[in-house]
Length: 327
Picture (cartoon, rainbow, N blue to C red):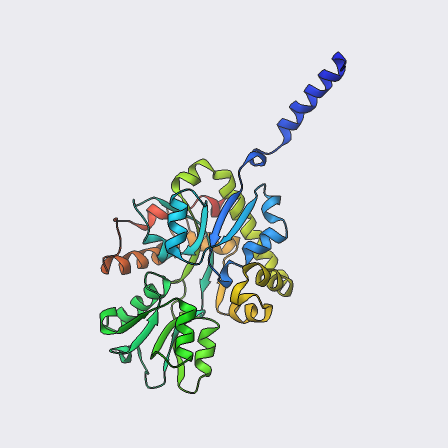
């Protein structure tokens, strides 16, 4: 039977423990979904190196390839966050400020592009050609931006709807005239005897940008968890820059799929730029002095609006959450 003093000591111990334990210790695991893409690699560094836990949050990384699966799942509360492109998220809005962009994670700088047959020398030459791309994805967004600059629209082409890797494979197999795809398929397409690189995203920096997205309701209720995820991401990017080889091995294993080979991962990595802490501050700016992200979001809104694909009228300020990158 416990003595009075031992019971008192136990009570004091519990009180102290309760005081010093961070509030996040009682939080549910954050489920973050993403597709198989090189830009999401540092999430696995954060997991492997304990950066998530260091900042007081448990994160379960879930691979979900299709946006049509990811966004409804988040809206249904089955996952908490998504890593996806700025433009894709806008397609799933049911009200203007339903989503919040809490941190930028990577920017395609040559990682996306169009491979085409050698007789197609310009974007204008795509008119009437069979072009493979994934409808309702960043590939369609990117293509529409380029076509508009050339005075064309999607209806001027003969579209073939398929996911970006399959589009690249179809081009390499000489089944289509051109494909909107990403690495390693851009390099593979260039190496065919009939193909060349028509254009890539290095000519439009900041246009294809991935961000971590959560619902406005989630961010309001789980600000501490959101802050922790952003802090862990920034630390993971810093680690990647300081320890490239080790980082590539971790990221290749984590992302897996066609990127499971560290050599392939490293080759694909050449076409992107990761956003670290200082990069995000510059890219986001502030509510009173917005950075380049605002123009990226507006470009996406303009493209999808012109194609009648948005359900609601939205502005960049509805979506960009400046809080976490500036803390």
